[in-house]
Length: 317
Ligand SMILES: [Fe+2]
Image (tube, rainbow, N blue to C red):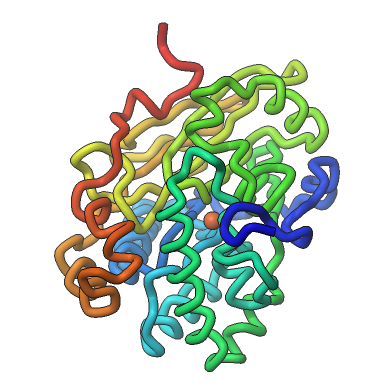
């Protein structure tokens, strides 16, 4: 196994098994929160967003779909992030998996594809190594992480909403990445929706957002990848994103949204956290020249390269 490039066997699962036992959801709204990456200010803002919905009469379920750890490389912040997240429904991302149960030779467990630069891969392995050393001094948190599932299917508004971290074959799969949609992945999507029986799949892991809708197996199906809730996703925009799923439209403007079969609203909602406060904390944890600073500091300040219309698939002609 090449560190950071391939994924451990324990990450693998069968699409047909993913929705075998859906859990009913009683709340009015689900936030699927992927890629918090240890950002406490983004978590503050997400809690505020949920509270604002609750004040308007809608109950909100927070579902963390992995990689809530990454930059939180201090004892205090490591405990704080995990204690706050683990009060809610959560599944494992590769980062959390490797902190709970390090896999020999997996590095960061990101399973980076070829188009990702080798320098990025090596720095991610270094970040993981530092965080693993820290996690080893918090065995109680490691145990709680190890008990988390790798995916969860929920029954919501008569639809099966499948929450996972990577794709329907692997915890760290890139099959629901922006780059996969841009290259054309309708055939695999058809298979995954047929085999899993899901109506909506909410993913993350690959750090760029996607909103896809289409017919699969005679059903109206949706994929939402929130990119990152704790880092910017769009050009010149440092805000994070979460996936909001609800029977009712949000009163706050989304970055992109659609109405699925059965009248379910699926939106990518901005997380307008305190960027300067987070960058100040980040700089203390990951000073200039550190692997996280080289790989991520610019993105924390400036976001990524996409515009909102880029992330919607199928693309407008
Ligand atoms: Fe990930």
